[in-house]
Length: 209
Image (tube, rainbow, N blue to C red; front, side, top):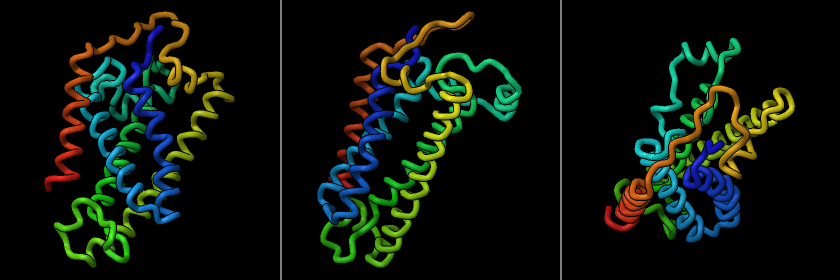
C-alpha cells in the first residue's frame, strides 16, 4: 500500500544528507560550499512547504496536522491511520520551523572577515550580521538535538511497538492494515509548480534581493 510519494521521501533523505555536510563545511571554513549547500537546503524547505499545500494526500499539512484532542486520543491508544500520526505531525512542524529559522538566519549572517557573507547580509550592518551568525550556529545545534530525539522516537517505535517507520520512507509503502486507505498521489503538474516556485524563490533570494 502506498504511503509516501517520492518527492516527500527525497526531501527527507536529502535534508538528512545536507545536515552533516553543512556542519562539515562550516567547521572546515569551506564557506563558499557552505553557502551553496545552504541555498540548496532553502530550496528544499520551500518545496516542502509548497508540497504541503498541493502535494499528495499524506504530504499535505491539512491531512496530518491535528489539534491537542487528536494528540491525546492517539496517546490513549487511538488509531493513527497512514502517514504521520499526531505526534509525528508535531515533529514535522518543529523540524520545518527549525529549518526555516536556521536557514533564514544564515541568509543574513556573515563570517568574521566579511568575505563570504550570506546573500541577504547586505541588508543589515556587519555587527548585526555577526550576531545572526552566532544565532545561526545556536539554532543549528538545537536542530541537531531535535533530530537526535527524532531518531530516538523511531527506535522506540521499532523496538517497543514493532513498527518500522524507516522502511516506508525508503520504499514508499508497506503492507495494508484493516480499514486503511492508500495515499492519493498528486499529479505531476503539481510537482512542477511546487518545484518551479521553490527554485524561482530560492534564485530570487540568492541573487536579486
